[in-house]
Structure formats: C-alpha cells, structure tokens
Length: 276
Image 1 (cartoon, helix red, strand yellow):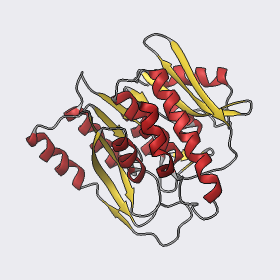
Image 2 (cartoon, one colour; image 1 turned 90 degrees about the vertical axis):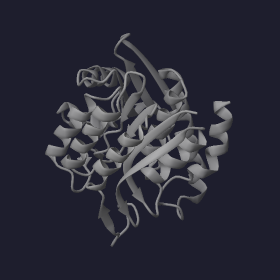
Image 3 (tube, rainbow, N blue to C red; image 1 turned 60 degrees about the vertical axis):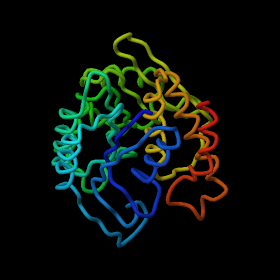
C-alpha cells in the first residue's frame, strides 16, 4: 500500500487544504498521513470572525517523532504555508524524509487574480521559490507562477506563453512544473513540462465561468495521488483536470448554498472507477 504525507492547514468547516487532500488521496487507495500547519474554524474566503491557531511549533516535534519511528513516505505533498518560518521547517522536513525512491510535490499556494493572499509577504515568496527548488513537481497557478518568476501578472496566458513560463519554472530546480489555469479558447486546463525530456503535455476541459474555493487543492491532491500510484505525467494531469472539472460541474446546482467549496464528495465514486 502506498503512503503519502501532506502538510498544510485544516479548516474545520469549508472545503480546501487538508479537508480536501485527506479524503481525496485516501479515496484513491493511498494511506495518507497529515501534518496540520494551522487549525481554522472556517476557511478565510468569505467568512468573518474565524478562529486561527498556529501549529508551527508542533511540526518539528511531529517530524522528530516520525523519524524515531522510522516512518517513510512514497510522496510528500505540501499546500498552503502561512509564514517563512513554516517554509523553512518544511524544507527541513524534505531534507529528513526525502529519498531517491520517493518524490516531493509543492503546491505553492500564495495568491490568485494577480494578488498575494492576505498576510503573505515577498519574504514568503522568496522562501517558496527556494522550497520549489527541492521539489520534483510544483503546481502553481498563473498568479503564483508570476510571483515565483518575478514577472508581471497578465491574466490568462495562451499555450505558447505558458510553455515559456514552464521552462523558466523548471530553472528553479524542479523537474516537472505544472501550470494550472491555462485557457485555450473555450477550454480551461493545465500544461505540464518534463524538463528531463524537454516535452510538454496538456489536459483541458470546458471552461466553466464559476469561481469556487479549493479547486486548486482538488487538482493538486488528485495529481499527487495519481503520481503516487505510478501514473505518468500525462495520465496524472488528465485525471486531475477531469476530476476537477467534474467537481465544479457537480457543484453548480448547489453553488448558491454551498459557496464554501466544491461538492467533490459527489464525484469520489467516479474518481475511484476511473482509476480502475
């Protein structure tokens, strides 16, 4: 049985970060360990008065206990990290638990629509850039890719500009950068780059004009699970785009009531059947 660990925050209500990653990767038949970096009463998009407990100090203690137990992982996957201190602690975790036989996925969750999320700084961007250099796969959206590369954000990019950005992202040190939020006519999807082979692959679905919280986490979780199960880059990309699109479509009838995330639960059966 394959084993993955994911390091990111958890919202007690609202579907993003660990609240998505744990059930999705587990449904794919992968033992999923978690390190919560913070606990929130709800996610931060649209809710007021939410509670927040920082767990930065707990991460090294968890890692130390795991090291004493001799635990190992087939995949290490990180999502939202809220401070430069957390980025450095996760970097140390990579040094301790990274192996030639496993792989690291960094989803550099930092912003959207050309802006950093509230509370994030340029110092964190620099730390995330360094963290990406230790990853095998990174999964930025257009905004995050622009910050990582230090270039102006210009909204949706066509395929050629996306490929240029992917080549530059690979120069950070990762082997397989994946760029999400790529538009192609009336389609929306992602492009990935295998820098070792200098080859690109892409996957697209119908563009759905609806913003939902947590769809990036859905994509990154399915992608990580697929690679853990031995899927190649193209297969993992296609599965992640297909499932994310299905989750958005399934949410539309409920979107006015379920605005705090996608109804991914309705699609887990499909994901399992697609894998088999």
